[in-house]
Amino acid sequence: MITKNKPLFRFLFLFFGLYMFPFPLNRIPFVTYVAQWYEKGMEKLAIFVGNNIFMMETTAPPMSGSGDKHIDYVFILMYFCIAVLGTLLWSLLERKPRDYKKINYWFWVWLRYFLAAMLISYGLVKVFPLQMPQPGLTRMITEYGSFSPMGTAWSFVGQSPGYSIFSGMAELLAGVLLFHRRTVLLGGLMAMAVLSNVVALNFFYDIPVKLFSSLLLLMAVLVAAPQAGKLFTLMFGNKSVAPYRIYDPLATAKYRKAKEIGKWVVIVLFVGTSIYDNYASLYSRGPLAPKPPLYGLYEIEHFKLNGEERPPLLDDTERWRYVVFEFPESMQVFSMNKERKWMSAKVDTLEQKVRFHNYNDTLNVHEFNYEKTDSTLIMQGEFDGDTIYFNAKRLTKKDFPLYQRPFNWVQEYPYNR
Image (cartoon, rainbow, N blue to C red; front, side, top):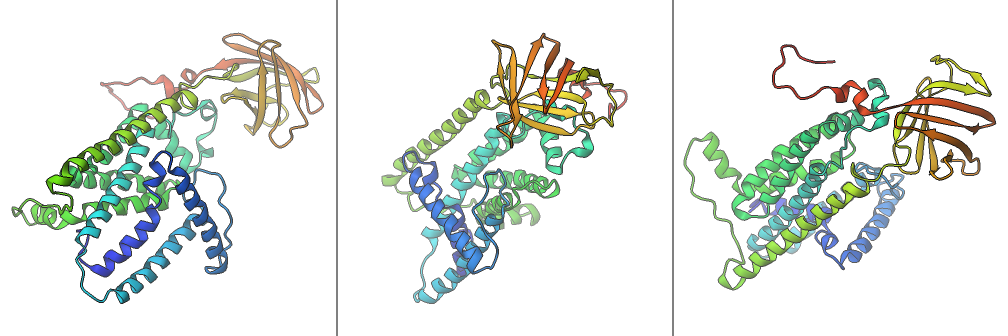
């Protein structure tokens, strides 16, 4: 049992039940629409509760990768209050003593599978280096002092695909171990170790997944909790302990085979689909995705504004310093002081033209002609009423020390720059 304290169990069951639901419905094909309907309804409820009960200005969440949005805190506070009130009501209505073995077991299974699903998802997105990819071209010309704390963490993990894969494999292994009762303690302990590091990174590098990762860590503690006493006695009491026997309401021969088949179907389907989705993402948005026609980081050597050659002076805000084509249908322009402008761009390889505009001004479209070789790019056209011509050399990641340094077994001195 997770805990023999009935009021505490009621609270944990209600709070984490609300938090985990609609899992696993949101992972079952053809049933996901039910989960989406529920999530939309809960979002509307959280907005109402936030505005009218908690007196917190709450709006629909923006489309972002943040797990620490305003509404996420409203959800947690709402679940906490419901769990407290539900625990009190449950305790008052339960007049006869009841055995909590079955509900304890199924709640424990629910926690295990939810935690396993999250660990496998986050593990695979690191094994296929998608979550934290290698620093892109623009990172090569961004000064370290301009990095955000999160950008720093993303860059140092992503710079080494080997480290990303290693950390992902640790999460993946912990998740797989949680599926099996014989290895659940090892999986729980491993999940606690892995998630402690994740939580530390999120808090100390201001990565906005603090709420989610902290709750996952607490779930790992709860998953390992049934065997905590024996583990403490073994490790700190230096005493032998009897094998832990996990209560199983489906241990009879009638259900054992069906349970094993069902478990493996779930594992194969979930892990298999997750691997396929991440593998496909490598070619759609990952490092193996098609590159734009002018892909590259170009350092401008000669720049003419209205026919006048402009020397590369750092205080010249009109002279361009870099042009970057890194993502599909986009273009980035850096001035001499490295101020960046993001542009929506389309490249016509037949006419050798680039048509681009500011994302906030779709009517003011600029058109440049270009000539490209493997190592140079020449572009000319009109931009905001000025005639611009530039000749640029193409830089690759190997032109920067970050990618010049190979792995070395033997080092007489540290290469720390």
